[in-house]
Image (cartoon, rainbow, N blue to C red):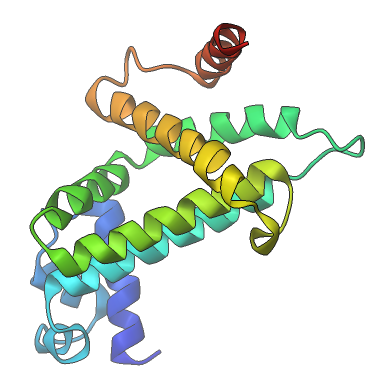
Length: 190
């Protein structure tokens, strides 16, 4: 593994261990086993490296979530949807620093136009990926209507539940609470 790859692996580990704001150049370099100057050489800045690392972590997480939501033999994804919510909440609980880092990224994007554009593209990709997972089709076959509805609503639900787990894990909703809430909202929407 070269210095560039080692830095990316080190940055991912630091994001998991310390979060975005508490990760220093020294932390990344030490974890990666390379010099601090290598960060500037390969990525330009600490922020650029951490942004890339965080986007990759979120992509990896999305891919693993997609593999977990596979329909049963009858074509139903209901049980897997419930398991997905259990897994999401377990992940929010196990890695609060990682999810806090993703929230920090949204805040920083408000002042950095390039980061905001990258984040907007990542969010659009996330909506499409979530719609594909929930519709049970490849991303290339997802309709724009499903991206705007299924993908957007699932992303909004995930973000809201994540924020609740970050701010007050003791009273944040469980997977069963989320599913019961969705059923109640479905009744209202009919």
